[in-house]
Amino acid sequence: MAQFFSNGFMNRRRAQWLRAIHEVKVRSSGTWYTGEIQKKEVSGDTLIINVVFSDLDARSCHIDRSQITDTYGEVIHEQTENIQKATGQGTMLQIKVPIKEIT
Image 1 (tube, rainbow, N blue to C red):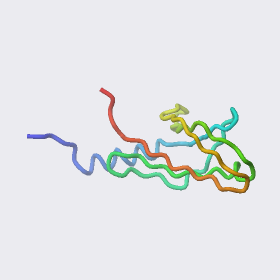
Image 2: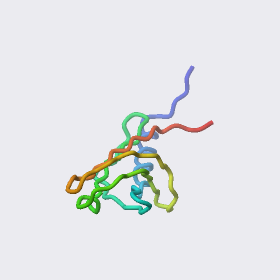
Image 3: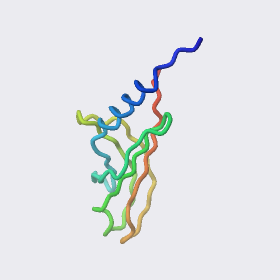
C-alpha cells in the first residue's frame, strides 16, 4: 500500500514554500537587478514565479542569469538565461522550478 502525505499537510507545505520566496534577481552585464514578484504559486510539483523588472525597461541588454532568494538570504535556485531585450521592451520573467527532493 502506497503511503502519501495528506492533502491538508501538503497544502500547508506549499504555502510555507511560497512565503519563503523573498526575491528574484536577473544579471545583465555583471549587475544584478531585483524584480517585483507579480505572482507565485505551486502547481502540482512545480513552483511558478512571475516577475517584472521595470528597471530594465529603458535599456537594451542581455540577461544571462536569474536567481531566487529565500527569506534567509540564501540563493535557493539559480539558472542560466539567454534573453536579449530591446530598449523600451518590458521585462517579465516566468521561472518554473520542479519541487523534487534530491536523493
